[in-house]
Length: 550
Image (cartoon, rainbow, N blue to C red; front, top):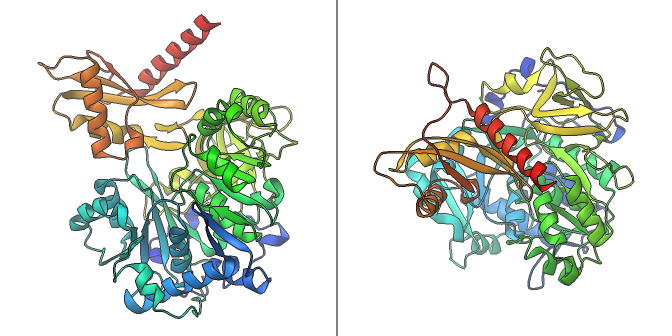
């Protein structure tokens, strides 16, 4: 790196050695970026230079609208608060905590403008999970929605690096809104390097120990210039909306970065369940939708009483899109879902298709700017029709924060996503399964061992094993096999008690939706739990159910 604007060099010092980085591809003309680049400058300030200042940028329910100029000005004021009042220096890590909202978006851009590094967190995370993230990233500042401060407050005693917490969505005199209102809307963005870290996105490892994926300012702009341009092809008059949180890279791209790159607008919803989304789409006449397959299936069943007439583009990611869900949505709305696979490590979608190229059961082909292949265990490309490990290369890639698992994800310059795929005779990539213990349920990544640890904290549980169980609606669900301690009786009441216990320990979406009480678990001679046997059992049962239904 020949240039950096970071005074706090923690992120740069904790990047993996360059020899462990993946190979990067910048073959497309639009991916030729300058050495210095601040992604907020590119996405906001350039928008005003292009004459988009009075175009609407961010909408929220109840008639709230920010133009590009208003969003830029608010981000500038908050950046001043960060620097002048909260003592932020370039390179500091800033935890962002809140549901999707205009203030959450403005805070994200303010962190970028001030040269900070954004660390987004899911609103549902509990204190123990927040502590791991804050500690791993050595977070110094937090900007938190006042309604979500309780778990962060519980985490603070275990977070010595966290010196400053400021709240938004509050009328308090020391809240971010009040502090920002006293600031000038003029701010000179820190001239970060294209290879200065802009964000650290956390994803759970299979052990429940979070991995921080480090993405540069260049990466943020690159994902805007690949999938959206080649595949999505949205227009400046489009209104984006959807369900993924901005803390997810899927949501950050689809609901904030992508629309602003082209002068479009986004509708940010704090609550975007399948029950709430249809009304918001109808009321605001949204045209581009980002959500998970589970949501599309649930909304398709409501289509007879919903108004989806304004929609023209629908994007699915986060989990494999079942062919039946694709067909159900097309029948209900006439729209072909744009399916894609991305990962936190790659920042966003790298294999997809446009509407004309959709093929039931297939994810698609590598989007322009990326390459992909299916490898055998020795890292050799497999011929069509054979299942192997998905490997990807492009303008983005995996750089874990101080984590030995870097060498598991990156091998010989390729990013190994942990997915098993095959390529069919027409070059389409077809998803088969996850290759590790990660459970992907309704678009959420859930580490089985983390759920096991929560269950084992309950006084009735002697031992347990947690795996993915096939589920028609959610793709897979979290299934727990539980061995009880003597004196405890299995039954519905105990199932409910264990589920509520897990919800109180870790994020509620991770709880086991199915619990089976067993007398013992399969283990090796050394006592290691053989989760693969439990997974195989669930797959066999699912096959038997399907055969019986047929």
